[in-house]
Image 1 (tube, rainbow, N blue to C red):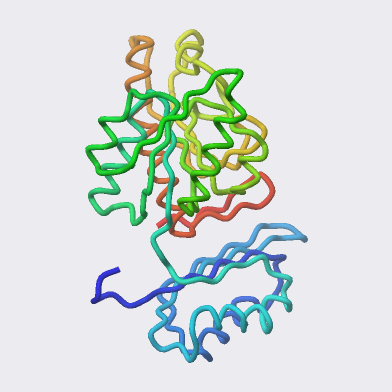
Image 2 (tube, rainbow, N blue to C red; image 1 turned 90 degrees about the vertical axis):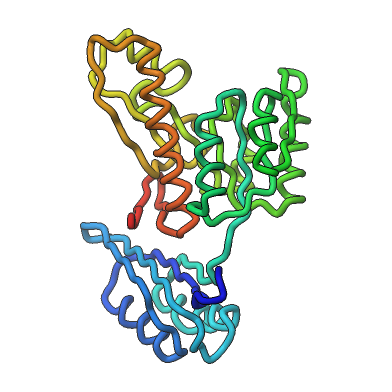
Length: 290
């Protein structure tokens, strides 16, 4: 954040839908000197609806620190509505990128980070192969390789998790990291591991989706960014996109077109996550897009 920008905090709320939530939150922030810059809300239909709220506000005029404001909110507002919530200052999250041999998703994120489009810190890139070392080190980012075999899979993952903890990583992005993570790894970062699947899920889940799409003669291909769960390729979907193809496309051209979609879909998903725009409820998401 530059010296000319105002410090900003963000409040994220989800709870059972009922009257008075917006009024209570708005009045609370007003009473404590917050200047609301942006507010998004959504409630699901039905008798047992779910309510989602995202508020960004300037903190210059607060009558207390953001941490103290959070404590006050926990005591005065959250219990009244049984809220699942988070209130914190906006900051640059520490993000680890994991990749294998394929570079397009990884490089897209690194280009956007270097260009200032992604306000994150990237303390490291992790891979199970050496192939991308030179591509990463040109950005000045440490590159770690943890080779994996059937016999070393457990210790390899343990070493990666220890490194992520040491680097205080808040978000893990699987930029075509072609390894299955354990349940313990996923549980350590709930709704904080983003994966890109090179298919428009639920179609062609698993390996070689472009090959199977080619054999099926599809007319669209796509990509899906989702949170990783123990159920492979079944996690809550953050973003998807497609591109039209035809009978004239080869397996190779499908892969080329697919790579273009993959990198933009993953970048948008990461952007929306770090901006607090993605709410997870059960196995679905509510995404407040810009």
